[in-house]
Image 1 (tube, one colour):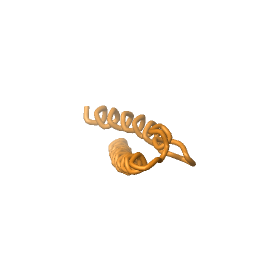
Image 2 (cartoon, rainbow, N blue to C red):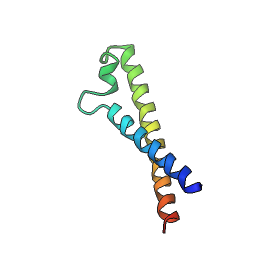
Image 3 (cartoon, rainbow, N blue to C red):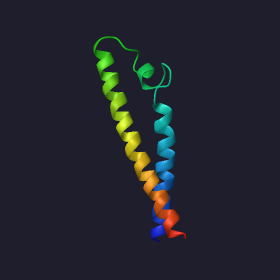
Image 4 (cartoon, rainbow, N blue to C red):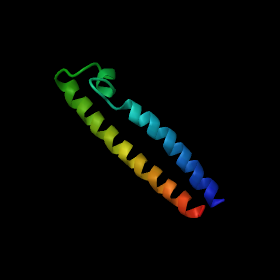
Length: 76
């Protein structure tokens, strides 16, 4: 039962991690382009959005890593 729950969390966080990484800006793309560029106050808003996106991505990546570690230890 516990293995199924951890596996489900792992799959969900893996899919979320894919979408979060795709939202990041590469070379001039990502969320900053979706918000309409960087003009005045909009630049500050996109910077905050990018910082929050970074934090969320790191959090999801940590949860994903811990679930994979838990599955690896559980299945040994």
